[in-house]
Length: 326
Ligand SMILES: [Zn+2]
Image: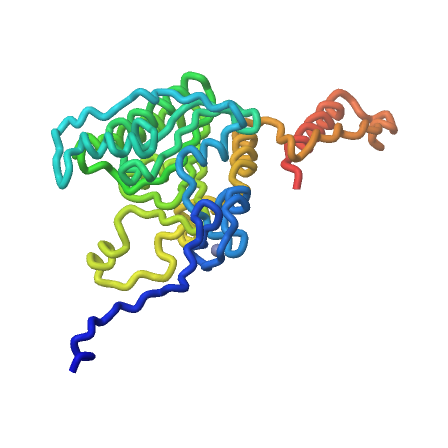
């Protein structure tokens, strides 16, 4: 019979509406269709569920640096493929492809900027560049940023986003952990602030070095932060991991990060932290009121106050001023 031979047609979803991606975007968490321009205005945080989309290195530079203040440094550094590494592709061609697609020399952009008027050294990693992996160039650029911060006595801010050490550079990648950590230790000794911002995802060797070494470690909501992957840990310890494991909120609860900060509050929060650490006035708090003129106390009115009383009064006055306002 002829209908047996009839060719079966695959089901086709004919009514599927293809949304133009440059106008609308679907939130990967809540499924809400979002107007892209509005999403961009909202710093790529979903207005419905507050899901933080990745914004890339340039996005973070724009987010943190005052407009027009960012000056890139060491942008010319390139990896030399020291091992002549080839897997499915030669490392050199991977590098070239990443450089072409991202427009950056390697997986971190470094430079100088001001943040709310405070001069800072800024390093921002780019996950789109070979998974934000840390090779010799990333380590060198982060270390140089730290050295510049040391030399110029200004804070360092690193925004991390990384899959870990870059395997194509083998041991040389792992050595970057020590190199960057040494510079950060020197900064610590010199009392220069370092703020580490952990964005989604920050894993492996970056978490195990400069990612977690901040004077303050700030994470973005929902960011995946860890050393080894969850599956590897589960297989090793033969136990099921708790829900939310390796997410920013879980880490905050367990004391691994200091703050989880919404991206829309990130710049203001870092500005406040820097001003606190550098003992600069905070413009958002406004000028301090001058203390009211002291009236002579009952003792001095009675004419019993000698030099000792005056000195004590000055001391009391000073300690009252030094006491943090609450
Ligand atoms: Zn959403």
